[in-house]
Length: 248
Length: 242
Image: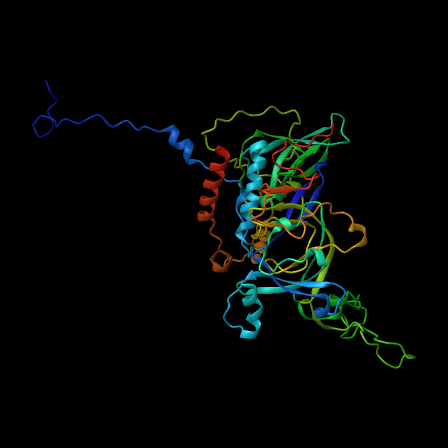
């Protein structure tokens, strides 16, 4: 008793749909992260200088683990301090900026402690840092969260004794599409202007002010060929070099 | 320039200088030069032998060395004379030594008196007529003349200047690189003359330097990196204050 199609002939054999196999191993390998301070800036310096600096950076990373982190992560950093009680100082905060290249790479952590906003700039390769722990992994919509200084303090407060949130290695880092509410103007910088290109603020300004801010837009900048700096090939080479050295 | 940390956790900025194809070119005796000590001509960085006259190339041909871009003179005592044609390496210097570095400063072109000599200029408003960056008075009434050497606008930079008493923190023998404390005159990748410091405070600082110089084909086998004893090496664990 086979099913008869509308033509009257017996139905052709339809094979079952092929199962879609997601290879988690491959996905894990595909995600490569090269810390931004490894990429050399554009200039006339001899590449030998960057090579020697990279050797020192890799040497430090072999002894001390610097985890992968982006702007927007909540980190806890313990530094050695000769004037502190336990000779060690622990600070928890959200990373708002990552600057510098090579051994002088820095990152700024911000937190609000007892109503006072505190920002500390740490050097990634400084020997005084004892440990860096990533407490919460989440990327934000921007690369630079300096506008948190003019946002309501609730967006910069993080519990000092917060427990690290667990995160699986192969999952993608979640992007928090939070739109931050700001304190009333004046701000330290005019964040509504297109040169900062901030997507993470909920602007409650009147339409007229937003239109006026667009007067300072420079739409030709993205087409400027002299400003182009394609780092993809350099990144590939450096990624191979760094990962091989770290595996040894 | 690069940061460097000491064992106490302090950060210092360091300039990297590369010793690129340095050879001794000629020995000039005390009587020939007419000075107090004999001199040694040293050349750095190979350059093309064309576009130079035969008389200029004579020195390089006698030493048996390709044409060098820069030739510098060093005053040496008679027991430190080296045979012309010997190569010089970065291991000639040792960490913990103090050096003087001479180079041509970055040329800024014709500059006014405020940038060149640091004059204060005049206020921007309150009735100043066309006078905001001018030198003002250049002499007194009684002098009735302008003294020689009066600071005035002119070409600034592109002259030889020396930074004295810079400490050598680290030496890389494989790539011939010297790590020197602080900044050094000149633009990036410019040619620079490094000499043992002649400041009276650092007269006895260097103990057992390689004398007269470090010979690569000699018996001494140096490790790839030579560090000063106060430097924090990245192979050590993080610094703690016990």
